[in-house]
Every structure is written in C-alpha cells, then in structure tokens.
Image (cartoon, rainbow, N blue to C red):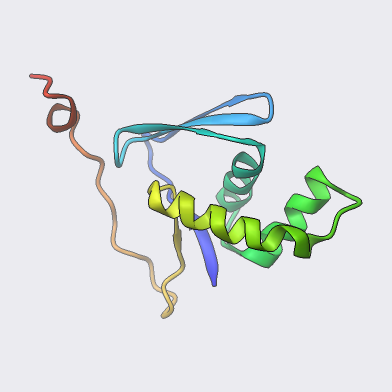
Length: 114
C-alpha cells in the first residue's frame, strides 16, 4: 500500500531543527512532529511511497548502521496516526485521485465573526 501527503495551498510547515510544526487548514489544527514523523512527511511530499521504501529512506537518513526492517512496524503505525490527523492518506486501490478536500472555514471552528 502506498501513501501520499495531502497537499493544500494554505498548509504550513515550519522546521525547528529535526522537528516540524504543521498547520493543517483542512482541520484548522497545528501538530508538532518529532524527527521521525517530520522525515516521513518530507519523504511523502516528494511522492507516493510504501512503508518499506519509507523505512529504507529513514534508516539511511537517521540510522545508517540500522536495519530498515526494524523501522517498518513503527512507520506503519506512524502513517496511521498521520492519516488520523488528516496529513496523509492511502493511494486508492484503483489508482485514481481521492476526492478533493476543502479547508474548514475559520469562523465555524473558532466562532469568529467576519
């Protein structure tokens, strides 16, 4: 199964050393990503990947002496967490683009008046 990062023109990612803060305009939430999650997001922004490819990439970047197999289960769990946050999703089985997603209006979420 391949995964992709959900891009949006209003999405913001700010790096702080190895970590990153992501503002998701689709949910109007901000998330702090640790080094592993930030690396996975960076890799998925470059294109669709499966957990094994991500594990190989992560091992090469963060633990060159390590084994990619040691990271695969951790990455699969992390991908599911990122999916729950609305930052990544799975490639549809038929290969077509998933439905487009629209950002949540700010006024609805915060009670702000325009």
